[in-house]
Length: 69
Image (cartoon, rainbow, N blue to C red; front, side, top):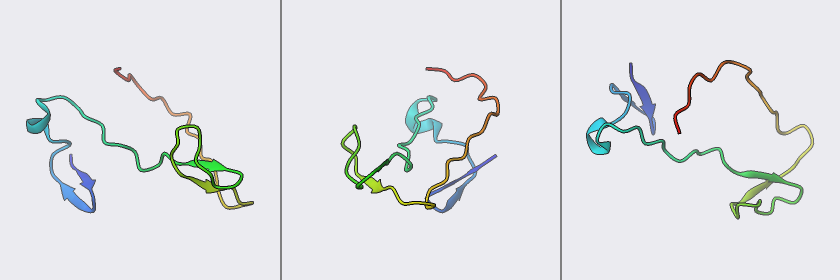
């Protein structure tokens, strides 16, 4: 099984050679804040201004399985 990385299909799931076999999660591109005025959120990261009928929250109740931490 492969995955799409930066628009390029990779045949391997992730690069085990550079990580010594460990899974290293990449930084999420979806971690910004929605604030009333678009100011940065509590983390200091930039935000987006809340606008009526613009954003939708989707929730999945599917089983997440085991998550190693």
